[in-house]
Image (cartoon, rainbow over all chains, first blue to last red; front, side, top):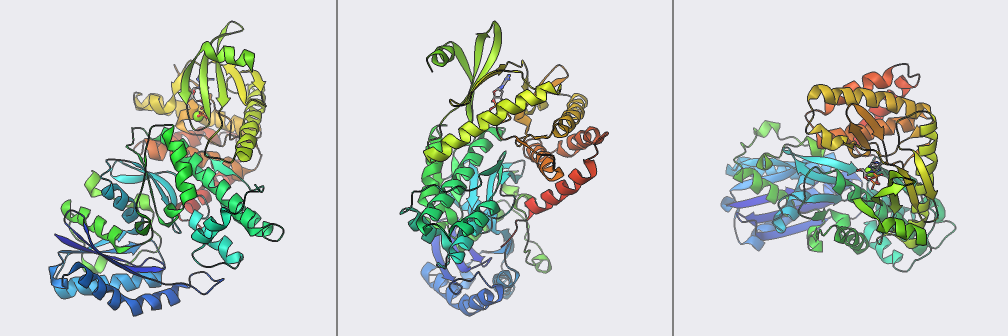
Length: 330
Length: 219
Ligand SMILES: Nc1ncnc2c1ncn2[C@@H]1O[C@H](COP(=O)(O)OP(=O)(O)O)[C@@H](O)[C@H]1O
Ligand SMILES: [Mg+2]
């Protein structure tokens, strides 16, 4: 079986192709970069995706060494994300499915992040930490759904880092820039440490950090923001471990911010105490990509899920991960 | 720390969690007691870590004292050394509600949530927000119920903060016993509401928080 996954929730337009064992045959992406000091503008990003879609598709097919007719299943990320961007991927997916008579699965983007790491390391049921621009959540698969054991109650950690970088006049995406600046900082500035059980808030950190930019070295602001925000996340994961009503077989970290080594190391220090391993994908696979969508498509096909009517494959901009049924875990 | 070390040596570790090591002390002034030590976290900057541990021990001590004074069901505080992050308190012979729920008849579970509603109302009335109101921080035995673990607690008489406790409880129910959550939470609210002047406002913020948690804000 050959599965194609199409990703276009935000800045990345990607096409991934995998075989029935989940081996990656192709992973091609084009990324939209907003002008310095600006956030993603949905229509500009969508325009970028429309322009690149055909190239990305062609390159993916040639990387895999196949034609569209060799594909057995098509999956696309239906949401959550930016409407105009989502529609580019959805249109391409629907066109291909209709034109070539292939089954089409709409997929939740976040579930793609989780399933990719579970699949890659053949994990049974890990505790997931999903850290990206769209999510900052702690999840475990239980009773047919990903149950949220903890999450941000306001902005995501990706959002925190990106907006801080933007306010400081740095490049998008903010994560990598903040990380390298933080290595040169060391003064611990006072930032709000807000944790409520296994949930947490970051907007207080952002507001205070933006103020601190005026009076302190950016390196120290970066260091303090990472130190406080990541400690909060790790503490929340540690608390969640206790709340899960069964044993997990590791901690899986996914999403763009998973590439941050400071966060990864902190998580490792915590996990060691419980004899748990932290599983992280090769960095390239943390960011949004088509492979994560293809992996979910493969699971759906193998579980015998009936593909929905084409008319009910519209995009969903706001879509909670714990509202998605996970038929292969039932 | 000499005396403390001796005490720890003669005690049994009963829980090791995100925040603290908890020991059962055989006899503290002749009674079984709980010794709670907030241990350093290797993943946090030492300066941040020390500040957090001291602050949480302080809050837990002061709030245990205040709530007990008000006649609410929490362990009595026997001793506190805030510099070392150590508390010694009454031992409650009970099990966590999270554990109990898997064995209880629905009817008995419902009764505990009704009691819990009243206790939460009393706690909020005393100006205290629990800050980590989950099924593991509620101990039960034979129809009695206690709240423990006040390390994330703080003073507030704002309905917005009270709503946070409701949200935590609901989340804990949703993730551990999804199929019972609705029913048990409803029972909780029924008794939380009784004679509670804050109720309408708390519920308004609770609904808002639930919606917001459902879809993250963007900036
Ligand atoms: N006063 C007490 N009486 C009996 N058991 C207690 C008491 N305090 C704590 N425990 C036990 O220790 C566990 C952890 O204590 P807790 O105060 O909740 O700390 P943590 O921050 O580690 O969750 C509790 O779940 C409970 O089993
Ligand atoms: Mg506890």
